[in-house]
Image (cartoon, rainbow, N blue to C red):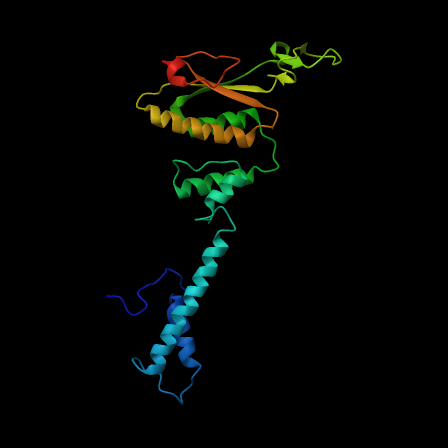
Length: 225
């Protein structure tokens, strides 16, 4: 059986009394002994309604305040993710909160290659194989004209460089459908977009396929199977 307060929300005060009941008692006490505040009377009912209104306002403020932090946010999670360059597609709200909280904890910290690999491994599971980079001496660097002391002149592709190019090698893991594979790739893209410097580029391919340097984003089904 529930009483009139029905355990509205699990917010309790020091002695375990629910907040609505405490508000109700305080409102009744304000009338003193000169008025009839017995259960079922007019003032009892009036104070009950007022206590519920006060409690609803408190809860509304509490929910609004919760949106100010990713660790407690609900309907504002998408706003936080947009600010951090993340996507919550396919994730539960608790997973989204944990990822946002972890991401904010790294703000201002240097991103290490080992840390990036560890995060990709956690997000991709057994789909992940490795991250490959291009050594500077083997990188392609294109410049618009010969006045620059480095790079190869290429008027069709000025200011191109794959010095900061990351290639993510993936594989078809047992039990991973094409839909789940693409979902994991989406998570990977969100991670890389939010971690890498703006001048860095990245692509991916499956171990059953091959890399196309000029068109790295062609469909995985056409060239990966």
